[in-house]
Length: 396
Image (cartoon, rainbow, N blue to C red):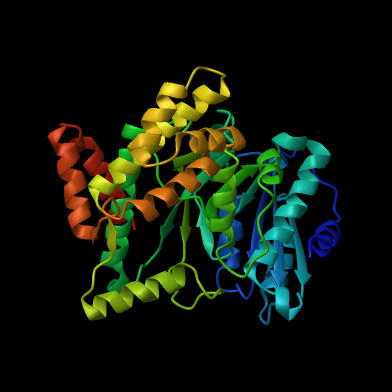
């Protein structure tokens, strides 16, 4: 499979990359004639914070029209002719039925972008994924470049759906608000210098930027039928990729109920519709559960960092092992075995879930939101932050 992907990536875009290329945007497109022109318009009209155009020499757009039965490819070719100043490259491909899915398309494109960037800028080149039913913000590329200059490996953009169906909207609002509050808790309990508050929680296909270096180190995006971006996000975390969830990097995407994959945002919208009809509510981790997990994670991270720095950790090992109901020698062995912290935390989080059933408390999302807001209110820090959260939720 990998050899086939590599071959097709090499053949996909034969045009030579611009010598000034820094960033390659990839757009998988299957039967997107309705949206693709707006997508390309948004990618072409890019500016900085002062309204100055971003030079088209800095970036390119790679579109793969795969297995289309509409005019997606023809529309892209006409766009290429109408706007020759944009480095737009388009290919049409009919994938075999067993690999004709978004995972293959995104993998082919990201591999092609990786190859092209390596010819010009090497490991510092930036591969950026978006979707053919999405419109990036007018300063999208500028803000991605700015965030990358801070020394991060990954920039996840804020994904804002347009016209969320009415029956799904309340559940979506609650889901987003809960996730933002949870992210705020993490920023307070286990802060990250490269990913400070304010930040968001998304790192998915419609707005995902990675360096060539981290793309290869994480094993590249998997060619699976759906949730390929989520699996890639996990792979990035498991090699301790430095992530920035930038609120300035934004993309606006469709809220269609008939999606292109067996599971994705469209399926989630349908599930939320059904919940409205049944008068059900999403169940999420309680405030206490979230805070306990973040606290454990912080302690374990500090221990892992000390061990990797060859500092004396026996006392701390014994203390944390006692808290986790874990054998001290086994914990030390795991720390020594794991080159990356996040892969260690994945194991320990699973251990917590399996061995501390009382820790994992699920409550209705509306209650969890209220508890989180009360927590911040008690610290007299919620005023500005709650306004921001409400503004973001209303934008959904």
